Figure 1 (cartoon, helix red, strand yellow):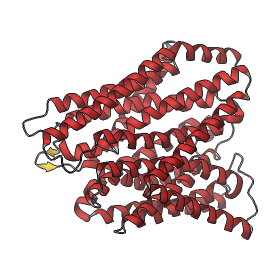
Figure 2 (figure 1 turned 180 degrees about the vertical axis):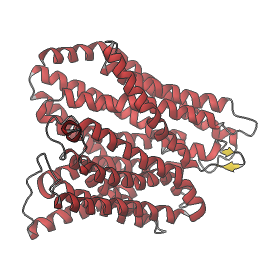
Figure 3 (figure 1 turned 30 degrees about the horizontal axis):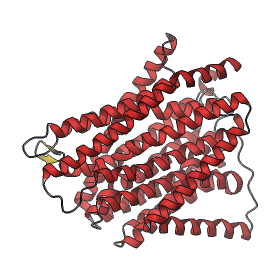
Figure 4 (figure 1 turned 60 degrees about the vertical axis):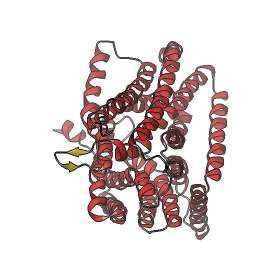
Length: 489
């Protein structure tokens, strides 16, 4: 009985699960609708829409570095989560205003909201567990289910919300979702504090809440929001800021590696290779929200038994396949591990790009087999998301596990933060690559549109295939370095 009680998950898991589920609900409503909204409502060209979406995605994933730092050194995790949630609500509500200027400002506020919310809800959950707590892995697995549940409900419902209630209602509902998540967190936090169930692990030492510190923090947030808003409005400025940020991150990475001992330096090199290569993965994977979203909207036969399926519904296939394939792959890796046949980190990472290549090749074939009406069958999109999801499950957890294992202990937090920065640069890269699939207003014939998408899919497949071959050639080298690390531990 005592053993069963000791394995019971902390009450904080329920609080974080519900908070994150509703936050992801709002986030994925926005992600699945943005490119459609910009092209349909504002009449933006494909290129302009992809550029804004790429810049927004980049800042949304880079901002957690700032949010995590501020939480660690100033305001604590719970306050950062609440601040991020409030910024999300305000940003999403501003998207409902019929003005492109308010639109960019709303995206900038939402990006900063993600910066404070995303890293700190996970860290807050982590404080519920003691060091080497056997419940931790299962707890975070349950938490990950909440992330995907929120995303699945969002992508399944967002298209119908727009169809029957309009664009503004979808953004308002995204804000409502965040408000619900905040309510769960605030009341749950009060409950945990009242019952002495907050941190079992260390919390950051907080700076005294002086008037000066409050003014400094919120002034900095306002300045950052203004900068991001300008970067979204002026494409060249956004490209410059992100390029400078990328160079800065690389300098920090190589300086950190240079200071390490030989074995640690080798481990850092492996982490750097995985992080840099992952940018190409996310740049193609995020096409789901970019070119593939418009592709489904324009040339895919969405009729199902006389009912036209909404475009964002197809993005939900990713979460659907995660629910099915995640446990199956977990069981399969465990079985192979027992038989000492489990593929190495480098092999799994390389194969993830091969599955991406197969996915784009499937779409290319679907275009080739399009019917007389030049519409592509739904089955090809289902196949694409199947291969996408297998690739994601091979790459994302594998890379994060490798980074946490290989990076020197003093750099683990920094390397995980840079992993999320890589997602941001992947999002920006996705905006650039989506330009190959841009369809101008002058192109109206279905055959021409299909031809443009076909050329883009060939490029995407070519990129992932080249990265697959590069990673495959690096497998012996990476395996040797990992083997040396394991012998020392």
